[in-house]
Length: 133
Image (cartoon, rainbow, N blue to C red; front, top):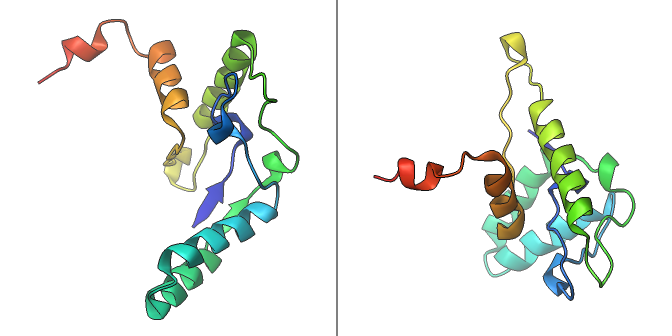
């Protein structure tokens, strides 16, 4: 398995957004994930060992997050948020896989603000009510 950590997928920081502040960069991210998983499963040694072994099977590309990528305490301007969103969508569209024709699966994991921003920017207006069951 392959995991790409994209700086463009980060939460957009608004004034005082402490939950939008990172704590690790580059290869430190893998160790941070390992520590968090260990802490999550520490009461079940067998499960912990299994999960950490599975983590070792995943290649993690942290090349775009080798420097601090989160915004300062004042947050980002709307222009910076728009530029970042454009870059994220470009990277997702360029995701290529090993299937015939280059097909690939991309899973975007992020905070609610980035997901809402994507929907607001890329869904047709009224789509939410049009497709309700």
